[in-house]
Amino acid sequence: MNPSVKIFSGTGSQPLALKIAQRFGAPLGKINIQKFSDGEFQPIFLESIRGDYVFLIQSTHAPTDNLMELLLMIDAAKRASAYRIIVVIPYYGYARQDRKDKPRVAIGSKLVATLLEAAGANRVITMDLHAPQIQAFFEIPVDHLDSSAIFIPYIQHLKLENLTFAAPDVGSTNRVREIASYFNCEMVICDKHRKRANEIASMVVIGDVAGREIILIDDICDTGGTLAKAASLLKEKGALSVRALCTHPVLSGNAYENIENSVLEELVVCDTIPMRQETKKIKVLSVADLFAIAIRNAYENKSITSLFIHSQLKK
Image (cartoon, rainbow, N blue to C red; front, top):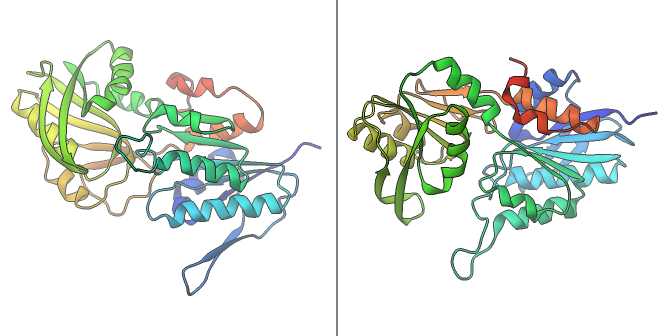
């Protein structure tokens, strides 16, 4: 008898998890996250998962309760004799802490990987890690999905002429180059210098944008400062319009105001993190289909590679 699939969600990703379960064709599993007056919580599976493939969906965005909740869910599933425990992390928090770039700092993304393994995870499915090398922090398989499968059809739908892609910083160059190559378009780079975290000291544009329709590509939109600054600079340099496509809408601090008051035509994001509020300039595309296919392929031991070819996805 083959193990069956059970899909569960933490409290931080319930809207997306419900969509994924519906696309997969299975009901979302019953789980209770019991919360105590001192702030502690305890996940309790309300159905048997003995011998099952258990998929736990939870993005690890702020607050850190989301990460701790996921770790406790993994531990509970392990102690309930689940056959395999696959954690589905649409947004992998602490990914920006991926190296020791100054003395006496933690490497948060490595610590999170260690915690997930220690808790009992057998596999990880995630999307658009800030640095792809983070996969090497794990000793278990990692399926790293690519949001280009979501964004490329959307860009095609826009039917923009004189299209040019832009990297809002040097770190996004490889990601932008891949999409620019797909469309056989030029790309430019917005080179920025920071005084401190979340504060830009200066920015310059490398490349010609005059008379072009610009699409900025990035993995994370945090405060929105970089995108707003880049969009303004690109318009000053003669760009006809500027849009931004970012996978993970962290949107902390004054992000919503920064985006709304910017010269951006729109900001397109994925639903890897729930939106805190609605705004006219921010459009949300769902990753539910992509993750549902990834879950099915992981369960059936099929290749994940096909998910990187956008034309094979269901429209």
